Image (tube, rainbow over all chains, first blue to last red; front, side):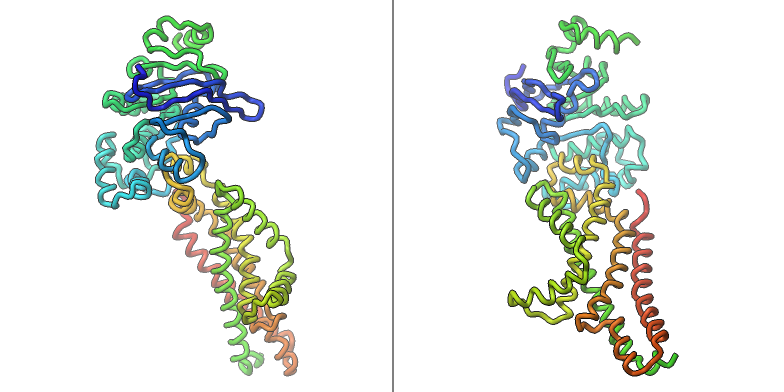
Length: 247
Length: 214
């Protein structure tokens, strides 16, 4: 598949003190591809996701985005991050700003759009995630699922080349998970390049082009979802799947 | 009792001197304090080191010593300014160290995810701090900054020992004129109360206005 690589990780290693959280990671994500990263807690999947836009600096190895190596801290890194949308487990909406201002802020500050143009775009995106009616509310007045949809709209407002999702539904009540997954399904259908760290196996099955299974800081398997779920190769993956798919 | 009515203009000048010192030094302390706080959380190591040294030196030096250093030291390097300006510099820089730490503690109350979200959207350090972190930190910083500025108002009394006109210094003249020392000090105390209670009131208003939880 990876004919036109958008994200490339080569030989990436990272330590937290003595803990080796990423071990010799090689991963290529092609343009338009949806890659779902799964694995047990502490396997390094969130760290992998956060390393792609350098929220976590890595110890060694190279990460390139659209052919460009990740720059060090500074303006160049900020420019590159603007091209990479990120959605967090804990939403992280700006608590002191309204929903509309949340979506508009970076458009104004980073993309240098005028307020009216930014707000217009924000309303379009809020409509798309079904939250236009809540534009003037503050994040704390919304449910978790609604907040996460706003967070997705906020990331999309930058017209990113790729979207990273770091366990976007893990902090949600079960009944709110679907409304977020639906928005993500739609994005995937629209051809957005996505890296999704999740425990939602249903989403992995239906939306992913590839499933990357991580354990103990390594990529253990990297295969199409049907193959992975029906016939996992490694014992580690078999063990993991048997635990989560039982119920 | 008539010490006040007889010497109203002397008290007035003293009070005005204290108010001026307090206002100018507060402005300096706030500007430098916020700047140093942003240095201390900056991604650039040299800025962080500068902020840390600034706070360590100024917070741990007795204010009187700092006055000596500024008023006697700077002229040796050819910096000759009015005494009042020297006093504002000493008071403002000293207090900025405390403001810096109050602001920094406020910054630490803002969840790290807020900054991460801003950075992930491509906002620079300055934009993240200015548009996302500080507006949220501001709320929890109002009470300690108020206390620090009240301390500044009272610390301005030290300037009187360095021939700057301010409220406490008026006692010398009044004492020489033979007025009751007790009443002299009572009215001086009232003068300080006017200044400090005004600061309290301003910060109470700020807290009502901006201190609301989200």
